[in-house]
Every structure is written in C-alpha cells, then in structure tokens.
Length: 375
Image 1 (tube, rainbow, N blue to C red):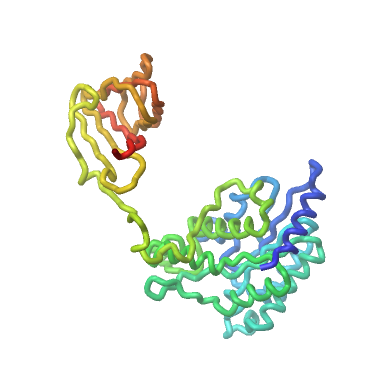
Image 2 (cartoon, rainbow, N blue to C red):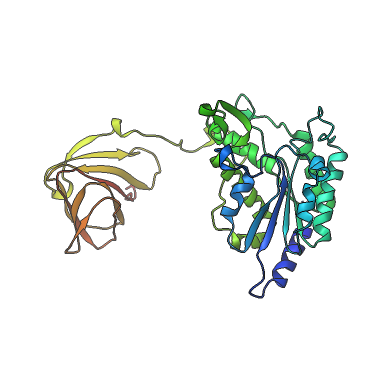
C-alpha cells in the first residue's frame, strides 16, 4: 500500500527535532480492551499497549488512551478522543485499533456497520492527527483465539478489510495486526496458544480475547514490527529485536522441509566413556543429534565423575565448554584456571587444553564444536 503520508511526516519530524533538548516523540494509542492498561488487581491480564514502551528507547513516550469496551464510535462519543486531542502535537504518532466492539450489533451505542460507518468514525481519528501534524497509523483488530481444527478463524473479517481499504484509499499507514496475529496463532497452535490469552484456571477464566503478559508482549512485538516496515527510521529507536511471529506458510507442507526439526531426551542417549584424550576416570556423554543430517556442529553434554578429566590435546577447530554445575581445573596453554557454574570456555585453533573435575560434585559440561568436513 502507499506509504508516502507516513514517510513525509516522519522525515519532517526528524528534521525539526534534530536539535538536542526537544521533548520525546509521543505515541498515542486509541483502541479497546485488547490494548488498554490494567492495574495489578486485574493481573495477569494486560493489553498490548502496556508492553509497547519496552520496545522503544527514551526518544519515545507511550500515551495509552485505549479503553476497555469501546468501539471507534463510543470512544469518541464518550469523550476519550478529547484527551488525545489535548496532548497530541506535531511529530507524534497515533495508533488507531478498533473493530472488535464495532461488530456488536446488539449494542447500538457501539455498533458500526463495516462498509461505511466504521470507516467514517475512523477518519475522525485520522483527521485529528493530520490537523495536529501527527502521523496516524491504522491497525486492524488483533485476532481472537478461535480455531477450526488447526486453522485460526478470522472473527473480524469485514472490519479488518474495511481498515485495509480505508488505508489504501486515503494513503494512510497500515499495520495489519489481524493478519500477523492470525499467522502467529496458527504457528503457535491451538493448545499452546491458550497460555498467551487469559486462560487462568486458578481464576476460573478461559478468555480468548484478552492477553496475559506473554501474549501482550508478543502482540506489541508484532505491532512494532509492522510499524518498522512503515517507518525504517524507527529501527534506530527500537531496543528489542522484533523478529517475532511467523509467516502464513510456517506450518505448510512439512514434506517440503529438507530435514525435520527434532527433540531429544538425554535419558535415551547416555554413553559411559573413559576420560577422552587420555583423561583419567569415568565420564558419561550425551551426544545430542549426533545422527542429524547436515548439522554443521556437534553438541553434547559430558559429565566428569569423581576424579575424571579430559586429557590435554591441541585444537584444530573452535570449541566451547559451558559449565552447568560442579567445579574443575581448566588448563589452557599452560595456565591453570578454576572454573565453576556459569563459566564459558572458548578454545581457538592452535591452543591446547585439558580439564579435571575436583570436589565432591560431578563436573557437568555442555560442549559444542564444528563438525569436521565429511571425507
């Protein structure tokens, strides 16, 4: 879709605010309960707007005006847009997410038919932003957790489509959260996705609309990722990765995958071995994914029992030891080091090393190194 209105406003803002000392850019959220703030008395319920600021540096401040139960119409008629109008200024951003409550045909105070009335109400927000020199961004409604088999159901179909069409017709920035959150739901799966929504047995809740903390953060990530696609300059102000969600094809035909992903349990892998490389004592090795095809590295757990060690040997490849538990003496290029839980040991080609368990507790290592090329 066209993005010129977003890009022009963004470039103008950064040009005006190039001088130091200007106030941070404000990000306003106008929306419903899926984005709104909740106090500790409603824990663990959170809206995605509560998590948005953790993705942004101090060049931004989030003003979350989203209100539970509101539609694009009732939010305005009850005066909530007035609060935004009193604060928004040139260079700010207004994220606009409605649709869920606009579909409540049984409630004439909130209902908007999607083909015309819904878009007309949304334009009130867009016009306000433009009047103040701010950037409006339309956000399609976040997905409700509803499945037909393994496929999430689009409960917001005509409303999400109305937002898309309005954005395209009026050249307004669009974050298609309906589409990205449905793809996210599909990749999570029907049962695992419960933990992201308000399925809280101890509170006797099974709510497929609102989020727990992990869900709010995940949706905020999708919002920021969509925002970055509209505004490449935003990336310099994003303090967390936004490589989140999954494409619609993530659970496609698994037969097209060259090698399947795997899960292994060490209970099935234990191999008793004497200390490698001429080391003393007995060890237990757990060679994870040893037979996985085309895996370019070895990954194993090795337990050095009392008195055991890995003997001195010189390296022709990089190797990392990570100490999970226990203590030992690590000899690297003729120097001895005491190591324990949390220590990571990188040996580069040309160095020599050895390690010896000490004390009463087994020394437990995670070890990884590149596989030698097949001959």
